[in-house]
Length: 255
Image 1 (spheres, rainbow, N blue to C red):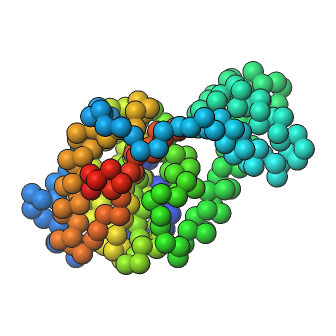
Image 2 (cartoon, rainbow, N blue to C red):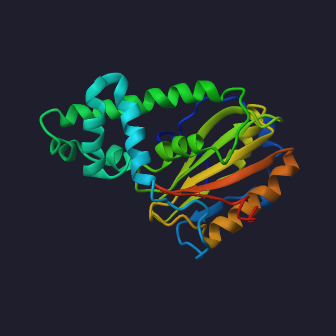
Image 3 (cartoon, rainbow, N blue to C red):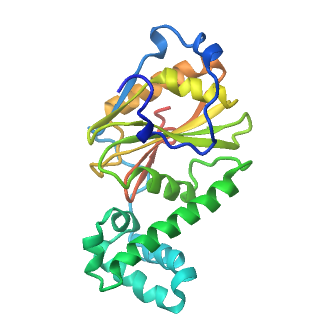
């Protein structure tokens, strides 16, 4: 998947793209070639396993999303959704026919959940601007899961930050297959420089549900982290996400 990612794979929170001709001249040579991330885990233990409180926490999340729209009915309906799908991520991936099992209003409930998540994400983005990015923040993990874990293919997302680690914008910069995703480093660094970023956080999903990094993940991350300082950039962290877990490469001493 070398070169610029297809338009349907790109979603940006910072508006139109910038002119990059001058930056492109700085991004030449073998060091900036594509790198491959894959979903063949290396057997390392994950950092944040699901706990026994995962199910109650999922119920609280769904109740919170539905309460502004459904009022006192929110706890009952959230419990029905949790019992049927298990997690919010699975519910968002479910089809309208799956939601129809919940009753005549099931299809409308799916649309309501999607709309509520989009509203929450919008508010979270507003709050993130000028805030220092914390890779260990659970709210950040929830946001990343909704952007990355609702599909059966790997996606790589970048969150760009300024010199003080404050949020500038985010973009899903590459889409791959169920088994891996390829990143064009030139595209990543052009985007970072074009918006004046000084650092960035990388995040990608593992559709297999195994949160451990693959050997390719480790090699590719180290290549990006090695090349970034040549352009005055730094990698804050690389997070690997599944529907219930998150692995930090920096916490795992792999970055």
